[in-house]
Structures are given as C-alpha cells and as structure tokens.
Image (cartoon, rainbow, N blue to C red; front, top):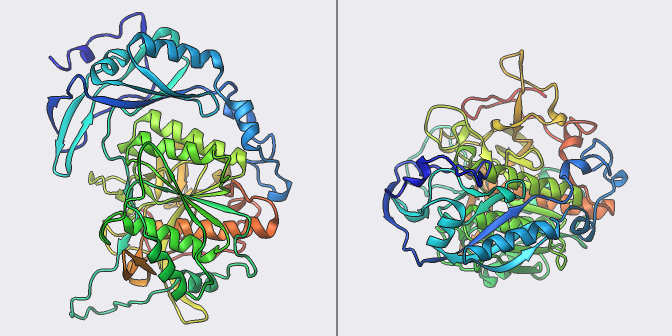
Length: 514
C-alpha cells in the first residue's frame, strides 16, 4: 500500500519533476515507513531567469583563447544576471506554505529555496512516500519513483534534493598497503612529497598562490591544526598556510581516525597548500548526500567572502548512482563556475573502467564526467630525485585503477570534437575522461600526515588538489584566472607543457599517443 500512489497516473493538476526518478540502492531492503512527524530539510532548485546557455562564449569563457583575453563575470554579476526571478521564488514559497512547510532560506541568486517540514507533509507536497532502507553499510531514508509538483510549478522547479539521505559519493583515495614481509617481483615502492612532484612536473617557479583562494569540497571527516603544523614544518615551509572552514547544512570539521574520511580531508589540504602555500584554503564541509554535495558547490561559487578561484573535488560515484536531475543541476553549477573563471578539478575515480558498478560494463565517475570540469586521472610514476624515469597508466586491478571512459549522459563537448577511441574509427560520442592525470599509485604515492600518522596515500583524489595548487599558481603569475581549462588543453595547448602517457590500461580503455 505504501507505493500505491506511485503506480497511479499523475493527476492532471500535477506534473512530474524531470529527472527525479529514483530507485533503491542495490542490495537495499525496504523497511518501515519513515515516521510521519520526522523533520527534514529539503532544497528546491529553480530555473534561472536567463538560460545559462545564453551566456556561452559571450566572454570567451568556453572558447579556446588565452585566459587573459577572457572576460569573466563577477559573483555580483552572476547574481543579477542568472538569478531565479522573484515571481518564481514567490510561487514556490506559496506552494510550500500551502503544504505546511516552513521556508528557512530563499535565495534567488542561488536559485534555491530551503524548506523544513515533516515526512508526511513532504510526501504530500511532492507526491511520494518515504521509507527506511537497510543495507549492509547501514540504514538510510529514501523514496522510489518520480516526484511531482503542481502544474503551475512544472517549468519552475528543476530539482528537489533532500527527501532521501543515502550516502551519495565516496572519497577517491587509497592508502599504501602495509608491508607483509613477502617479496613480490617487480614491486617498486617510492613516495614523494607534493613539493618533489611539483619539481618533477616542472611547475612554474616563483608561484606560491598568493592572492588566490582554493576551495575544497569535503563530505565527511576533518582535520586537526596540529597535523598541519607538523606536516608543513617537515616540508620546510614557513608557517602554516591559512585554512578556514565553511559549514554547509550543519556539517562540521569532525576528525576521528586515520582510516576515516580524515584521510581525504588532510590529503586535499596538504597537497594543495604545499604547492600553493600562500593561497587561502577554504574547506566546505557538507553532509554526504546529493543535497549536501550540491549545496556545498553552490555555496562556494556564490561565496563573496572568500571568492575561491579554484575548486578541488575528490568525491564521486558512478553516473548510474545519480538521478538525472542531480547530474543536470551539478552540471549547471560547473557551467556557472566557467562563467566566473573558476577552474573545477575533480578526481576521476579509483575503480578502473567499471567504476565499481560490477555489471561487467564500462562506467565513468561523476562529477568528473561533467563537461565543465577538469577530470583528473592517475598514473604510476618512477623518478630519480631530479627526473622522471617512467610514467604509465595506474592499474593494480579492477578495483584499484584509474577511473575513465565515456559518459553515457553527457555528449562529447565541442572541445573533444574529432577525438577517436580505440579501435581506430570509433568516434567519441560521449564526454571522454580523464582530461589529464598525475602520479597517484599508492605504491608511488604522496607523503602526508593523517591524525598524527605519517603515511603514504594515492588515488585520483591526490591529483585534483595537486592541479588545484598548480592552477592557483598559474592564476597568480598570469594576474588573471585560467578558468575553464579544457578548451585550451584540447585546442591551442594540446601537446604543450604535458607528458604524453602511452602505456597502460584501466580495463576497457588503453593509453595511446595523443
């Protein structure tokens, strides 16, 4: 009986929210209905007053032209040009009040309305029912089927987030396995500090990120200042780079143990700040839900206090784990970043071409598959103290290899036009990733400090902050944000300033020249 409403046709006075269809997680078992009076907070996303596509290339943000020739929007310009209309906001507020939901925050600039209410009132408002689901990893609240709203809101509401609180993403880092005392042929263990990698990769000298702000999106874990003090002292840096915390949806800086998400948080901070020690680092902590994740990105892009010029995201999961509304709303946020001149670096995943789905088919990780982000893959790198001796695709097995492949949701962007996939003759039809890569095999990983423990970590989540630090330095030297880098990487900068990785495979896809 709990799902009987979902089997009925949508009433004529209501319309479906496009892309809101949700299915239960694999191996999840439906439990009791969510208590009717359980309170929750939900984010309703609204259409922009002017389509984001209208702005495409108007300031060169999406074109293959030098960053200095690009004109970016200020955050104030963004608010005034692409905000939701007040009339749309008012309609959503009225709808919420009609269903007994309280409005705790309404932002035309962020195109969102935050609502608080009970499970039963939200279920009635959006035409669904909420249940508790049990999985081996724990219990979460969720719903199945497609959401609906009154027909008058059909063109206004683009997404509804927060009815479910399932964990949405995973951190993309891997610790080096502990030594067993058993010798394995051809096993090479080498590690690097971020400063050593910056030297090996020939990062520009004289760049320390001064005047820049790097935003880190974190969905769990935390850091202790004492770890940062000890780490940067060991690196020989003077003082501790400035690190500030922004709390999203009640999340906090909550460090615990080295085997927790603390590994991700400290890896991101230490790598980014080591190569850009004068840049301000702001950590946006949010709950690990699609709602929290999107709200954190939105907050960073609209942050008029810190104004990050680079974002680094080391969390994600396979595209199949996301609703279409989430894929599209995140993608719009990254398109907004391009308009602002903010480069978004995203880890491409660590589970090879299958991305952990386990159905024998290739999959790619999101948000790395967004056409508006710099998708960061990983390699295995061997070097002397002064030079790289070899670098190839990192692959230590199906669940320990760089992510990458072809999106099934996003079409191949214009900047990837004409690219071919092996075998020869296969034209790239979906967004291909990663865009670039860097050392991140745990066997040749990064020396970091996590909760008082000096350790070695790898994973694509190390490459995203490495590139974030690099780009903060580039922004500083250019005196102008690099912004959306992809059109340049595939265009006028193709083959320049990068190493061509031609050896290795991540499962379904192999490296090749070009």
